[in-house]
Length: 397
Ligand code: GLY
Image 1 (cartoon, helix red, strand yellow):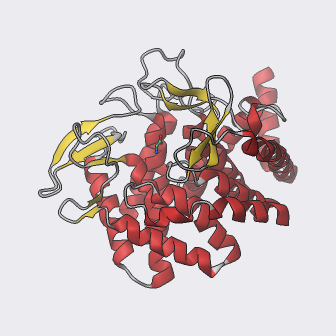
Image 2 (cartoon, helix red, strand yellow; image 1 turned 45 degrees about the vertical axis):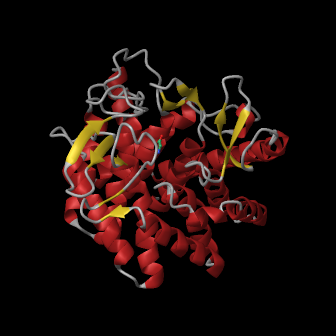
Image 3 (cartoon, helix red, strand yellow; image 1 turned 60 degrees about the horizontal axis):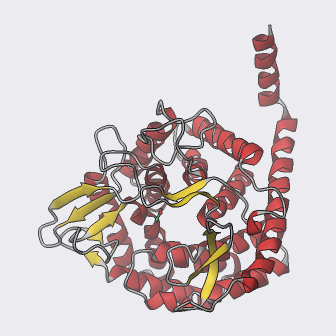
């Protein structure tokens, strides 16, 4: 009887125009919370000591084991997320206050446009300057985006068809490429749109195609790190760095892949990218070890499941990607419903109480479990993709 009542109720909600109002109210509520938390964070930031820093600490990243706010220098891969969150707050609320803060935090990253020592340019510059340009059309932001894309393409290895990810661990890998690198391609597509120079686009497409060939297993899960011989393009190693083992499926890596191939389809309309994104979505959503609330464990193959840490950042990247995928895929309704489920569960069980956790919005992310670093903590990128997913959810209504 209870099941019948529940089914009738959910059918009614499904057809009821009021359901849309409920979702709008929920999005409003979560942005209100995000504003309150960001106010807290803006008060906390100046109190963080710069005393032992080699370079100015500019953006929040996480909380330390003693729950102190951790800031990072501009060169850190996470430095663009907080400016990006400020741009999203401005986009949703239209308040000048958020635009001014966004401008101030974005400006601190400008020198990164010339930093060729990392592949993380898209994370740093597209989340900050990219959103800033989208919302203001400031020509100075456009110039930073173009210069950053030029710098990033210096890492392209034509014979192998990939952009080199890391320069560290030279004793382990000759030319490592991580699945995360798919996220940096959005900057290159933007640079071609802004300049009319197809060179950036070609590098992005080559990287996406080579990654599609070498990173994925027959079950459609992705490896984290692929090591290349840059002269022959031969794959030397298939490894992990932040996952449980070389043959396991690190959750955030799967989410980066899902987001990356969805974005590549948006930019190219190449059907093989859409199919790849759909395959990853199926892997993530239908996996027997995906928890009922759709917030993944840090790795699908972590041996202690269900007593393993979750990774909320994997959930927010996945949700944001699923909203976009829902606009392209014949299976769109399903993906949108799953993303809605993730957002509902995050709102119900994973948000910080107002005024706590130094102003982070979401709890329970995992940076690197094998390194015992940032386990079960807030992370700025979980919050960034959460706000992006909320904006996408709103746009789809
Ligand atoms: N891009 C680094 C990470 O996902 O942890």
